[in-house]
Image 1 (spheres, helix red, strand yellow):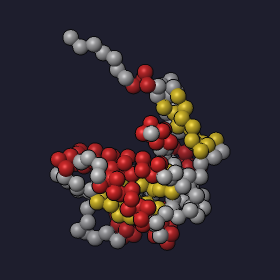
Image 2 (image 1 turned 30 degrees about the vertical axis):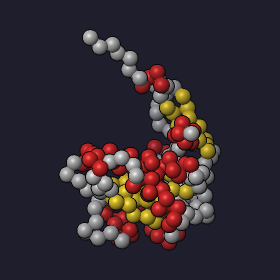
Image 3 (image 1 turned 120 degrees about the vertical axis):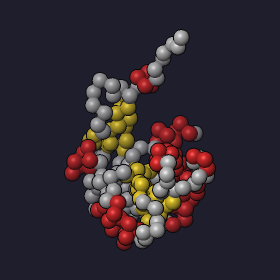
Image 4 (image 1 turned 45 degrees about the vertical axis):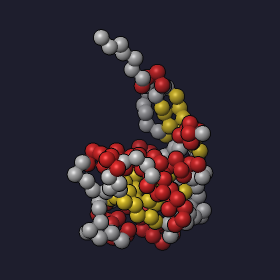
Length: 193
């Protein structure tokens, strides 16, 4: 089951915008992040949920979508995310905080994939501009990442053997092609002394 979810969990950037998500949908996904491991069990991450269309419309222009595709990567009207989860955090041990954020995001996205949803983690966010849209105050931690979510409106193909060529993804019609290295290319078989 986990292998199927990992293979299905692609970074989706085009959604069926009319199929909305609810606060309860997002709370269920954040609950998976809540129970995910964190360094020293510090639980320093916080989450801000966006599901109402009006607020989603304000968040959308503050994200940079699929920069490798240029203008083609930008979702059109009707293909924008149906919801967002902003991941917030601040810590003295920033490296661990980023590891925690990655673990939490993966738990959220695997939970989404199990429900037929897909998402995309955004590091390219206009962080200062998004804070008032999310209703954050100076007392709230910084925005680390934002996850866009919804029902997919594109198909995905994993392209094997990306070692020789470019690892940039590309589109053909509504199909998003994702090059991946072969397993034999990423496992280093070395003998120690």
